Image (cartoon, rainbow, N blue to C red; front, side, top):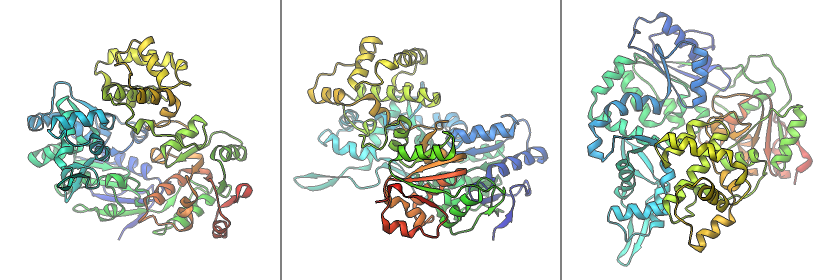
Length: 558
């Protein structure tokens, strides 16, 4: 049974804990206060022993670091990937490198999706002696392949379905080890992905369990913010440390678990426990107005949040119609353009950013449009690098440039020239972009010769390709819901792709429906005003909203 506390209450510093709290409850505020309490009063810390605080976004790191104002010599704030890389992979990867064919002299962490193309598929199939398999079949599975953590161990790198192909002798299936051929090829070049960090951490900890003791000796306290987003392997990692004496504390909200595609589940949050752990619950909401909290409370059923800040405001509104027009309406209603738009789909967020409205845009950066894998990889990486830099996300830009060349003295110059010449290609075709690279910047790439490939470059624009860039943590007014985790905004404009999405308001299921949790997260970011945009609304669905704490703008009802 959870003990109900406020965000200002303290708990024993040497007690493992799980804090459950809804949006705006002050979870991060409480965690920061608890860390300060530990640092001030614990006898377990010294020059080499630290508190580790793990969060899941760079925004979260910046927020906690700035509000702690303590310094890395006492508290280490990081993502789980950077924690495992620094404490497990980097110091010990040499122990298993030969077994996995991993080149260590220039180890680089990359997004391996940038390497998945038909050309690469063909190369890998030849490399593993399966050249008779259609590269398109292999690529289809490769695009959905990821590490599978099952029954407390990493078993395979594979897609989430059995990929079949036909022979005269009958139906056959792509072997799991064939997908590993792609990984081994990357490793042979010194490339590892972010998910590989988790995989190699598992391998090293399994083979060398004494690493746990070294982590325990360095971090007597490990706290995790946004614990509902933790993947199963990391859960097992924390349980191992917690049951071995590390003071493990986790803070989160199962209703905000939105990374089911990575294995995080509501049940995982509910079931988490370590030796001596006490459960607590914070039920207040200090963020939003009474009117917004009233709406949030009809979406979730596990508990109702208390209204704590005393602020009242306008009733949330459902705006029906074109998202750009409705966004303009929200600006007029608020009297300010400081309104954060949030969309589930990346293309919708980018359409808002580019002011293009709702258009069916091909996901060019996810397509395999060029038979020359190296040329395609370079084109995609440079588009991403340019667009990341334009929103000051330099960390993501460097990850893209490292794919092209690991010598940053060269790629910095290239990026500078690309930004200076942006006007020369931003409104043109992909062929214009290619020609700018070849003719103006003298980038070495093979000539485009095939008619089908040339037609694709001519008939698709740089702007449409840029719409597919998946932006990270930024201060942009238009972003995906997943990138808004841990943030709050005075005014929020939530974009629903289609009318069926209003079910998160009409028949919410936060336990079983990930999309409902995603939209709940979006709505709960609002402090003063909340607008929800849906393209259409039938008369039948309009009736269902009667009596609910939301007003409908009726101009666009059909």
